[in-house]
Length: 220
Image (cartoon, rainbow, N blue to C red; front, side, top):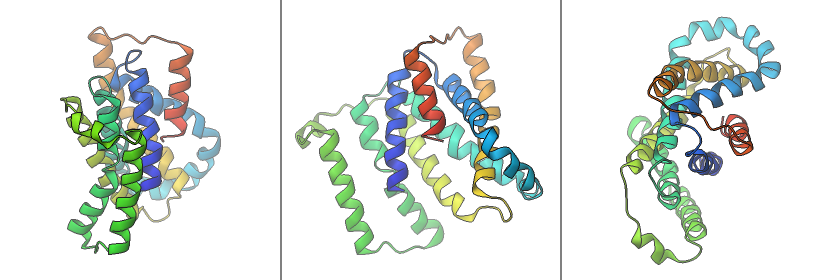
């Protein structure tokens, strides 16, 4: 969960950087389709091999894509349009806490002292990093409506993390990721169309191209 949080930290930083170039649903749609395109040479053979298992668990795959990719990414990119980077960072590092809390509620998993201490040390270290050693800066935070979107991202990703503990039998990890990305792109596309018909524009640049490449590969 911690490693995933670090990767996703760059995801929302890129969301913040790209917020002036592209709307949230359009970004989710483009990154998902790009990820599918980039993964196809590596995943298609596995996808065809695992198709019987995938077909038997299509509802699981669709739900996983919705709560693990489409909703969290839309939330994080929407939050990036109105929230400060520091706010996003602080909320993002609460993801492991949500994972542990939901695991406790739904699976009855105990929270050991060692795990709690390790988590506290890591979160404390990240807080020191993002505040540049001045923790008093955290007291001056002004929470905004975009922060609510960020909490939606955290809750969705935490739920997805626990959901992926019970992956469908006969479906390899590469095949599963591939089909999740396909569903995510299909779920996001109507939202992108809605943004387009309401006047949203994509401002193409090398910054946008580089950002898309990272969120398609690094955060997928």
